Image (tube, rainbow, N blue to C red; front, side):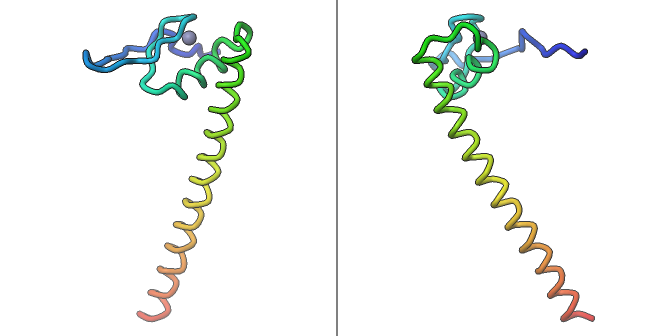
Length: 91
Ligand SMILES: [Zn+2]
């Protein structure tokens, strides 16, 4: 079994204000990233506020992924028909 890197190398600019995990000290650039990290890595020791923040962040992440998949599919369909029409005109 491959273990994930539990101590990734991070580089925080001096003027930045990172969101630091209370459990393991890992910094994150955004509050939603911290909420997702807490929900995935420290799920058993979350408060109700942290649980709610994780669920909100997870829901937004799922919506963003769904939107990305739809846009990617639309791009592929447009590319396909673009090549099809080009092929029909050129040959
Ligand atoms: Zn953590």
